[in-house]
Image 1 (tube, rainbow, N blue to C red):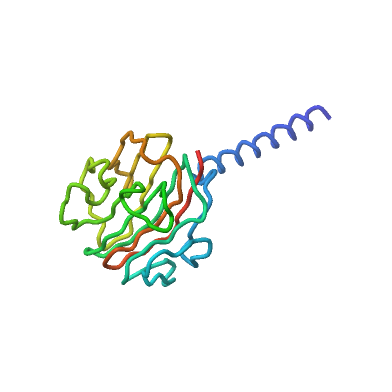
Image 2: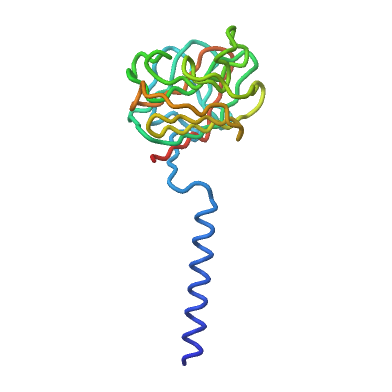
Length: 195
């Protein structure tokens, strides 16, 4: 009887350890999907960009505008897959002060704009806050953006490469906005976790 009990306890503990390991290594602990590419449900539309759902992504090809979260966030990590044409102007705005009039002077604009006329704040930069640490081109392929905002510290990675690590305290809280400015822009797998 003792041997059977010991064997049962061992198997239960091994099973629990295996479950924990799978959960921790999934990389998705605490993340909530905000946009999966199958609909725009849960997002507010600002501007006249022609957002639509196509081929498993939310995309726009003309107009100008944003998809904006109805909720505000303070400390968070957001990840998003983004595909842009070579001539695209896009990005993710975070901590937007005014969710109806979004601009680089009332939010942090994490830029995706490979051919920006003034390249100082091109792709990977936070416009008017931090120039990119490295030059990353995003046109013509899927890219993964990873943005962390914790207090005044802002960190941006594109395809795992750090482009910004800066301290700035202009904006503490606000919605998140996905931008369409020019070219073809597609978003999918937009996920967020609060910190």
